[in-house]
Length: 226
Image (cartoon, rainbow, N blue to C red; front, side):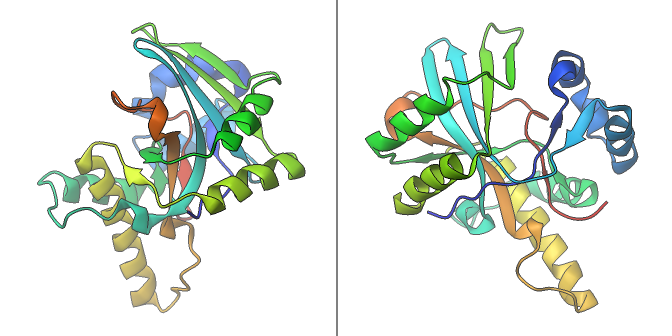
């Protein structure tokens, strides 16, 4: 599996409790997002990182990795939900993926050790939502830790979508719209950010009863310049 570290647009660490309830407004358009970044409510990470994400509550605790994967992982069965086209246009116009798509993969036991070591450090966020679910995040950007996570992901088989099919289809549709625009302009290279989707990768063994959904705005991925 190809799953890479990435520069994230996310809430400022000391303002996450202020930012998350406002995501509907912050992510309604480019001007609102620019304003949130200028205000310091949101920030653009200067460098690439992996993020360890832990979700705890009912029915238990799961730990995943947030990374970017080739948009091809979103390929479905060919049936496009009716509301996906409109959502795709909205995402393409925003030029930001609002939350990670949930993917499930077969993880090596070694990955549990690596992620456990990452979780020994101070968390970037620790937020409990109104449903009583606690979301914790650790940023991984130290070179040796990034290399260790990437090596494990490189060895893993391709992940399986475990999200709302309409959302996955909307993300794939947005990528296609932006690719078509770039091809029309004669600027397409295949390396553009819209060729990747930010994903929360969870071990299959931990999510047999269903994979969690990361809150909107906690990790966003800029897929084109705005």
